[in-house]
Every structure is written in C-alpha cells, then in structure tokens.
Image (cartoon, rainbow, N blue to C red; front, top):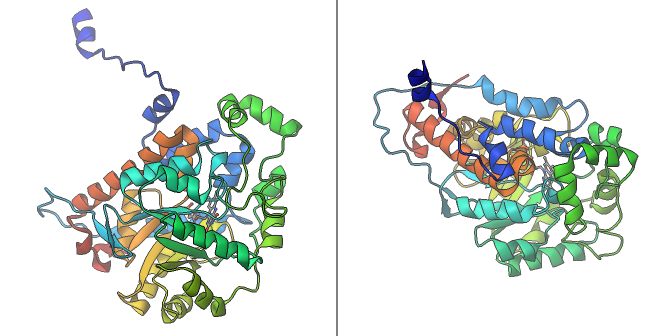
Length: 400
Ligand SMILES: Cc1cc2nc3c(=O)[nH]c(=O)nc-3n(C[C@H](O)[C@H](O)[C@H](O)COP(=O)(O)O)c2cc1C
C-alpha cells in the first residue's frame, strides 16, 4: 500500500507569491472573473463587470459567439500554426488589441502601467483611455510596445487637442475616437451602490474594505487615484463624482460626422472609430477616410438592446470590403471567439473586461495570463479546425 501511495504522491512546490498561487487555480478567464469577484470590493467589481439597464446586451455579446459552430477539417498538416496578422499596416503576433478602460487603477494600483507592460510583452497594441488613471506620458515611459490613445470629445475642444498632441509627442500610433458615449448609459449596479470615481469612503466602503483586505491594503498604500490625463484642469480629476454626472457635464453631445475633419487635421496618423453599430455608419466612416472601425456597444455599458458586434461583422465587412479594417469589440472570452470573429470578417478583435478580470485577480501577471490564454486558444482552435493560418479563415469555416 505504501509503495503504491509513494508512487503517486506528488506535492506542488509551495508558491510564495500570492498572485501566482491565485493564478495556479485558474483555467480560463471566467475563473479569473470569479477570483476578482472574491478579491475586489463589491462596488469595484460591479463597476468593471456591470453594464447598462437590464444588461441584456452584455449577456448577448458573449452568448452570440455560441450561436456559431465550426466546420472542422481533419487530416490537415497543422504542425505549424501561424497567428500573425497586419493591424493598421503593422505585423502583430495575434489579431488582438487591448480596448481602453477608464479608471484601471481601481483594479490594481499599477493600473494602466501593468496592462501596457503586459501588452508590450505580447507585442499587441494597448489603447489608453482618455479617462485613464495613469497619464499618456507615464504609460509611454514604461511601454515601448504599440500604443493607441482613445479620445472622448470634451466640450472643451482645446483640452482634446492638447491630449491628442501629447499622444502624438509620446509616440502613440493611432487615435481611437469613441462615439457611443454622447451621454452615459444607465449603469444600475453603480446607482444602487452609490459608486463614484474616485470611490468615496463611507461606512459601507469601510466594511467592504475590511472584507477585502488585500485590495484595501494596496489601495491605501498607493497614491490617490485621479483622471491622470486631465488632472488639474478646472474641476476635473479631483473630487469624487458619479461617472454619469461627470460624462454628462463634460462630453460634447453635439459631436457629429462634421467634426471628423477636425480630428484628421489635428492628428497625423491612423484614426479608428469605436462604437460603430450599423452597416450604414461603417460606410459613412469609410467615406470620411477613416482607417478602421471597431464594431462595439461599449461592452453593453451604453445602449441596452444594441446589436452584438459579432453579428454585425459579416454584413459590415461585406459592405466595406478590404479597404477599411473592422474590429470586433465585446464579449470575447476565449481564443475560439477570436477565430470565429476572424472567420466572419474581422481584421482583429478587442478585449476589455477579460484583461481587467486578470488585473483584478492577480495584477500584472494576471494580464499576462489572459493574453497567453487567448494566444494559446487561437493557436489550438486553428489546429483543431484544420486551418493552420489565420488567412485560411472565411465564413465557410462556420455553421450557424
Ligand atoms: C470598466 C470599463 C471601463 C471602460 N472604459 C472605457 C473608456 O474609457 N473608453 C472607451 O472607449 N471604452 C471603455 N470601455 C469599453 C471597452 O473599451 C470595450 O469596448 C468593452 O469592454 C468591450 O467589451 P468586453 O468587456 O466584453 O471585452 C470600458 C469598459 C469597461 C468594462
């Protein structure tokens, strides 16, 4: 009995890093979400995880991928799988871009710096949000990888111009104009919790903090969180505000197609429009000389009842052809989702929550985990479907 027992007993070496211990228990992005949910205060987790109104669009974004199944081919030589692709004229190892997420330091004190470093290691473009908690220059200082800057259009156009010029000066390669946020979607989890940015400290927050000591300790030890790109500009960047109060008072609701020319004058480089939700608007973007569109409903955080990006891919790509790059942003949790989107005509995919779950669960190594998990997932799916190169993909690879 002892001989048999001895032959099978294997103890894992003790891992001293708590982050690595947490990651060792995760097999996928859903697991990271569960770890982040346990680790982050409820209000913080809900800010990341939540969406608008009944969250129908949030659920549908991910669920729609399940409506497509592969049409696999076997006995194909898949000994070498190629996941490389061109994004805005540059070769990237994977058709993946990290979407902008405001207030990233809420998940981990390193915030945008951690995400930008992980993206640079993976050779993937990282999009810094206007509402970031690390500045354009701080991020450029830690990442030599490809960086894009996301623009929200404030009423104060001088402020927008100044940020765009700073991004140009700091070597960002493209701007991403987000156009689905004329007013803020009604995020009811945040309303119930009275969530503000930065988080206010009240009795409920203190209790939440006691229940989540790891996050609270990190939060209290790091410098105060603020909107780093606009701090010190008037009433911006300092006191706690609700996001809706902030967005609805600062963003330009009059923004229209007529303003695109202004951006083309101010920014010397590729422009991506993020938040396109119809074939008609994709065609209008193309007629304005835009380089790429991100089909996106903001991860379900804006208009509840919006179409899912994955279901728009085929008609949009058919309408715009090869000249306009089309990205699929929303609901991507697995490499197989990326492969499905590419088969439907995407030129690349974008992820938001996936990397935030990784960051909230285990900091920077958590983001590395997510990017590696998705890269492996794409490679494995291409091998198992018998399409060893991304360029082998087309709608014929899927059944609906
Ligand atoms: C916490 C959070 C903050 C976000 N902040 C921004 C932002 O500042 N600017 C922007 O264009 N999109 C923002 N988004 C939307 C993402 O860029 C992206 O469109 C969305 O997360 C994609 O869906 P997914 O989370 O299912 O991947 C945010 C999303 C989340 C979850």
